[in-house]
Image (tube, rainbow, N blue to C red; front, side, top):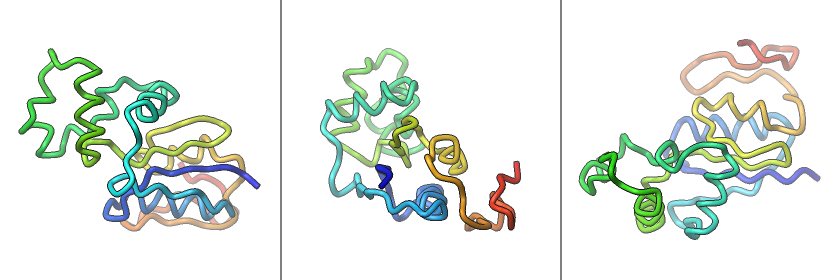
Amino acid sequence: MTDVTIFHNQRCGTSRNTLALIRNAGIEPTVVAYLDTPPTREQLAQLVAASGLSVREVLRAKEALCAELGLNEPARTDAELLDAMVANPVLINRPIVVTELGTRLCRPSELVLDILPAPQQGPFTKEDGEVVIDEQGRRVR
């Protein structure tokens, strides 16, 4: 059995598409509803490090709370940003997927294909109508 974890927000189309792509590979992942069960500060720091992104790149800068808290200011430290994301998980960009092949912030959702340990089992079309996987299970673009 393949171990795949997705830090998921059901209200987010990108997150739903990513989860569907994982399942289209025949994998039933561990789904962490991170708004209800946020990662600890240590877990979040590990996810950021494993993704190869900066803390700022994992911060959901479009979230209104980000501006309200002044987190877009360049002087904010990684420690301050991590603390804010742990206290307010809505500030964590999503979805983050962890597999044996790596950790990725899957924006756009098809980035998950690079780290899935199993091929797609059939066609896949995103919620917005964009075809990602063709009838032969091959990536379209």
